[in-house]
Image 1 (cartoon, rainbow, N blue to C red):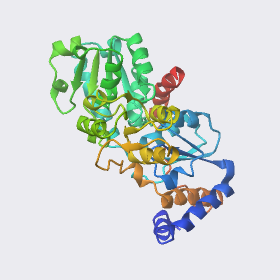
Image 2: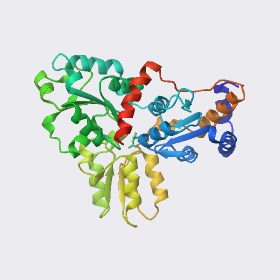
Image 3: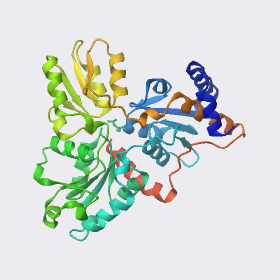
Image 4: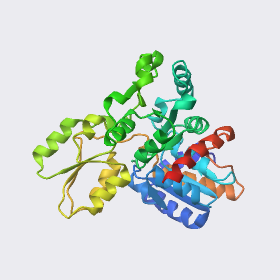
Length: 367
Ligand code: CIZ
């Protein structure tokens, strides 16, 4: 049966049966398959993850596993990262190919190469700029960083990566998320006067030559469409309505929001902060809704609110549903039985893999 026909059939099957099929397929395939689940995944899928975590933890896991098949319940850049870090005889599968990341799409290879060329009209970027890409980026950009002496970062290690980068060269070009770069630099005490924004739609990113010469941090104008929905007013409302509430914000939120928060950190750091708090401590959390809902269930003794009154759910993370996970497992089983080829395999071209792996390995060594 082809992939589309299988999915159509699965959507006509009651969800309880699908969950049972996933359980059986997992048992049948055993250690041939490793399921990685990002914190932002919906509960029904997250429950089947062999390992769950943020992209840093999951990429470390991908680098270490010897399982021949890895199903990445996450988005496209995460599966690409897993393919870069695994060996050529391991197969990485993204259950729904439409699970992308709008932020990752805000910087492409052509735009970053153009930026590098424009910078070279003023400075010598290969001598004085470390390119740093957030892990939420395409393999092509990770490859760009590897080739130009740069590195990858996640929200869990951005400060370490910036320290490493400034240790090597005097300037950093940080893409695609302005906010992670800006919030991390602020926390490190970097003054505003050392940062400029690079708008890829404008010549020279919208900057004068003297500003580029002076800048230590060049921030790409990109953002997460979920985290940008949190506003400082949401913090004000929470503080007005709940005494002693702690506001936790993800560093992809705007600087204005992070400045109102008690704590800014990655998903792993947010989970740790909540788990280590005293019973009764209340929190309002500014990050993806699936994670906040999971924390509510895990810590019923700690009142937890979602920071925004609106629903801010990552629609692309939400795409991976039990039907797609079941189809991915079925495709592995059938291909092992010689009945069909694997569906939705993610394969990064070899010429990108080499440099992208170097940029990722630089990061993993720091961790
Ligand atoms: O690093 C990640 O996985 C992302 C996208 C966010 C976080 O803080 O975990």
